[in-house]
Length: 203
Image (cartoon, rainbow, N blue to C red; front, side):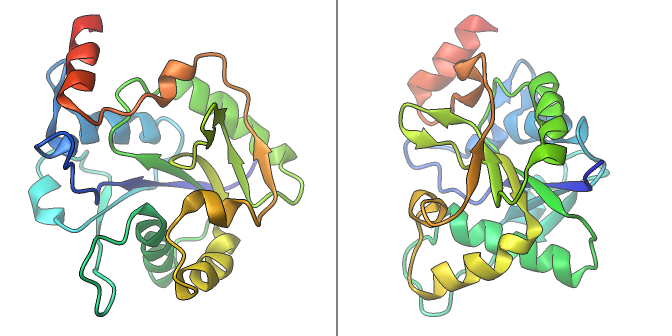
């Protein structure tokens, strides 16, 4: 069976929500904690990368590790999830984490299904030469809910050095296999107060 770790991205600014999405209360549990719990159903190695690790220390499960995200030199605007992902992979590599694959998750997925992720893990043994295994929606690849080979770091670094910040543009140059998904609502992102109301009304 393929070796696996998980990375949860908690570096967004939450501008549309107006408050920190990671701390949103969903059925009495902070959203970031919920996502970490689901990730732990797939692997015991779960890292959370964020600009503010101290803010989340009290809410992430005790077995998860918080990684410090850093602004790029000379940057005046947020660098986005592609750079956060690369920084997390680099930190894991420096820390000696030995894994062939990482499960990458955004922190704002309230309908994330551990059962579906566990089914997807089985697909890793049939990945062929794919750099990533991802679900697709009408908008294209869903890059923040899927699996990546850790060996993609070299390609990621090259894209970032070119000034690229788009997952879709980077993935367009890589071999990606599509993951089967029956319930597209699992990919729902909680981005706005209206989204939060929707989740609350269904809880």
